[in-house]
Length: 324
Picture 1 (tube, one colour):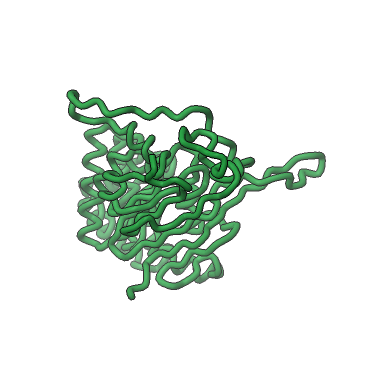
Picture 2: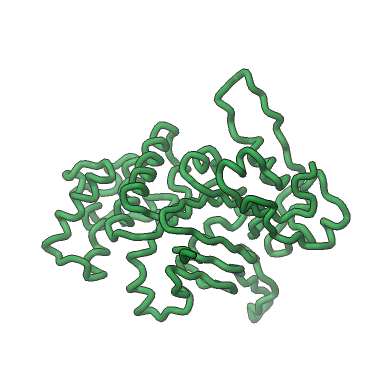
């Protein structure tokens, strides 16, 4: 059996809540609370859910930009969170992140050529004399002109800046990339260009993606599998076709009902969830979704549902999955 490229088991990330004169820890925000998944080489997994469900925190903790509170993250069999600084630095070129806001992730005082190429020098991949040629090459691959190398970030459009962010990660020839809402701030036409670019790059370089998004239509186009998160936990995961055609969790059904349909003659039933999202600092007992679930019963309030395979590698955490 082939070893997964990325294997995440029971990952947790809690942020302390302090209070009092001495700022003692009085509680925790459970941003990521026991998430597990694996990714094979060349695969793209989409993470979806409402804002605040823990998607971005999961991605950053997987890359060890945030230290975990529990669980494990293995890349090609190596536990990333057990590496010392030197070994982790050596691993960095293989695991890269594309930020949600490309403008805030670029230094406005340096030219994009320097921003894209500086990691090559820092990691000793090429000499300074070779950097400029490598940067021009990656700019062309990402759909930008070689003369853009001498421009500053404010001279580019949003779509161009996103291409720069992708180029900056791609120039290190990574094997695994976390894409954190890479198209959410872009116009629809520009979104399509970036999505097509990411698809082409994945096919050409056999890249593995963890694609974080709240836009299910984008995830459907790009990803092989989809995981649905709610309040720090994974509530459903399946292949793209299986999840979109046969959602089992009521939360997934509600998310899918909100996806716009291009045919004006079709009016799918819109499922509107009642109530507010509970605080991750004080999540509900039992199933975290029971406070908003129209099908909740007494067992949902008392017992945490098992995250199990409902068949065909379709995992779901619900006491009554598929019964409604």
